[in-house]
Length: 80
Image 1 (tube, helix red, strand yellow):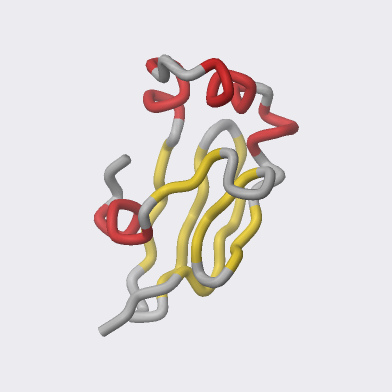
Image 2: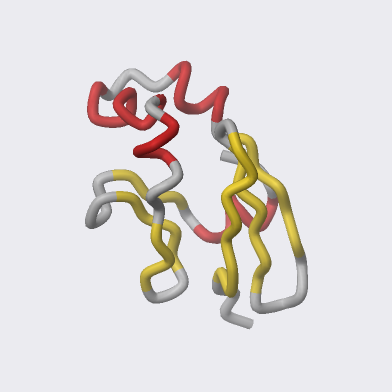
């Protein structure tokens, strides 16, 4: 079964609630990832106004034309 993101809802801070095509819902907190990231391109998403501007493109969660993206399966498992 191919799993995709059906809906992603920004909850505030660095949390996003995901609804997947298999009916599973997860809340993922990206704060630990963003705070420990080594890539300066990633650090800019500590600005919550930039962080909340994600998009769903072909079932994937992306920021700024794939500048930052995450594997669907990791999000489905609630791990990043």
